[in-house]
Length: 314
Image (tube, rainbow, N blue to C red; front, side, top):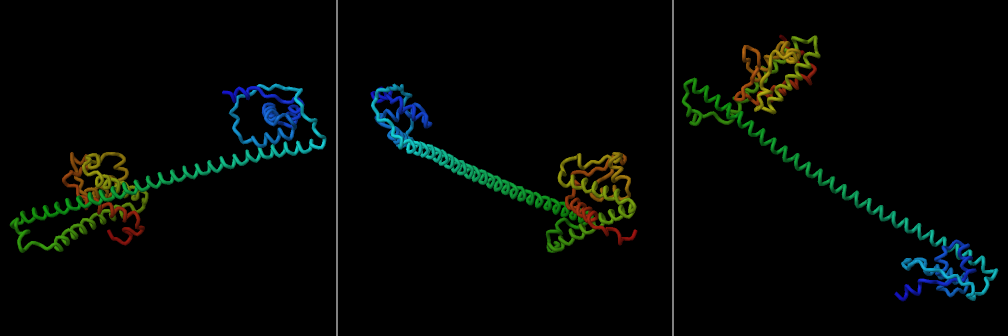
């Protein structure tokens, strides 16, 4: 409190104060410099300013008592240039300090940009890693689903085979006795059935292409539409809307129904005519994923092979 009271009023020599103001120094700064340097001369005041330029200005704004009676020697003519040089030096120092501060701030900003960039890259890496893990988990689940589907097909084929044996009067236990076919025999039976069905599907597509060889656009559109039908059922076997086709639908007729071999191909895939041929329907218990997948492969082969059916004879 005493220090603040002592600094509440500063005394400054009027002539020296005016000279400092003319040199560009603020009035308060010039007055404090004169006061604390003893109001002796300009050089002492400037030296005080230089010595205290980095000190924070935390004192309240003082009242300035301009006292013309304070003794101070008149400025020597030869020192005027020196005072101007010191004033310029002070300005240069202030300018350099400002530039240094700007450089420091720029370095801080650059460090912040680098830090933010690293955080963004790390977040991106974590996101990509999580996405890769989700993809691998999805692929694993898909493979397991395909494995279960193949097992269902195998069981269905085995059941059909046992049913045929029953119709032929063979004892049901025959498949479990010493006369039981080997694993290779079963594999061959399935392979023969698959090859036979695949050849039927391929021949049906050949018929469609040969019958409309002058309209490649219609053939291509039919192949694409058939691929969509079998693909939808294979992906959504429990959805009835994909397993039921209205034969009279203009779009279906234009793309598939009017073309020879179109409906026959769907029948090979398991579709049946119902309600007086108004609909093609694939019962859920007759959905054969192996046949549908084979049908998709045959269609893709027919679409990608420019010589498909070219060497076949009707």
